[in-house]
Structure formats: C-alpha cells, structure tokens
Figure 1 (tube, rainbow, N blue to C red):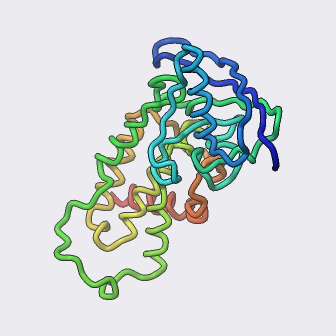
Figure 2: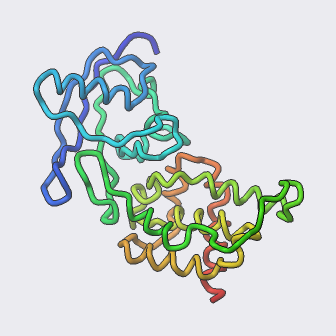
Length: 251
C-alpha cells in the first residue's frame, strides 16, 4: 500500500468498571501504513491532547509481542484481523484508506475495565500464584545435555511456555474461559521431571483459583486457538488440555 490513510476510529471510552461506557468516534488523518496499531493510537492521543481532550487509556509495554499487555479487540477480533500477532505487531497496512475501525477492551467479568481500553488481568497473576512454579529443591543446574528430558516432552513444554498471558483466549471465548492459559501454564511444568513432583497439587490449586476468579467453562469451540497470538500453542492445545485433565483426576 502506498500513501497515507484517513480513518474513522470508534473507540470504547469508560472511566472505570462501575460507570457505563460508550463508543466514541474519532477521525484520524495522514496515518502511515508502516505505523503499528499502537503508534496510530499515539497519533490519536497527541491529537486529543492538542484539542484539550483526555487521551485514550490503553495498555502497552514492550511493543515487541512479548509482554501481552497490548490487548485490544479490533473489529470484533482479539488483537485484530491478522493471525499470530499481538496488537503491537499489527501494522496499519492491514487496513485501507477510509476504513472504520472499532476498538474495544477485553470483555470478561474476570477482566474488569480499569479505564477505556485497559482491563485488570491480575486474575491471571493470582492463578499463577496458586501453583505456576516449582518449589521443590532441584539442586544445582546441570549441563543441558545431562537432563533426562525426552525431546518430545521438552518441545511440548517449550510450546506451552510460549503463552504470554495476554488474555486473548478469554476475550474471544463465548464463555470467557481461561482453559487455554491455565492448561498451558500447568503443562509447561508438568511435562518436565522437576515439575512432576507437584503436578496434581498444582493443577488442583490453579483450577480452583480459575473458578474462583469467575472464568467460564470450556466447551471446546476452539475460538481460543484461532485468536492465540502465539500460533505454536494451538498445535498442542489438545495435549495441554489432556495433560491438565490427567493430572487433575490423578488426585
């Protein structure tokens, strides 16, 4: 695409979780197709500040697709129209001049709105705090070639660890289920020898906390697989679900 674009943004504005929000329309002009979606929002906020208006609150940190904070629902899809990318990796060349783009926060009771497009995802942190770690003494670090981990298990554990906890799986699920996130975090540890010691206790505690946080149940619609920005996770999602169920019912 050559030339800059003029766009119409419909952005969700909401002061906090208690107050009612609404979509507000903003025109933005002269947007380069090489900008990232977040850079385009920087332009919008500079425009609003110049006009004496309050800028749009949105979450971001690394802008490299690693932290998962740049969570936006764009035209009805978590992280936007492209597969395998986070919002910060989405570029404006994915849109056309004259497009209207609707931007909303994650929609889930367990992710209450903080302000505008920022949601509170600390529920994920509390799930991890209940078991997403290894507390047994594993001794000094060994040479990697001496670790008795079959390659197939190591590969699956790496795939599970690719989950960045962005919450796209929850935001796109009709039940707001956190099953993909929890099963990935359970599996990345349960598949390794050091993590097997606490495997059943870990999954019991993490699933219990997931339910307490108000996430819905998984009904295997597969929406989470489609929207996960780390595409490799979807290749093993059924393995992760099976691993979690197996350890859950062992106790």
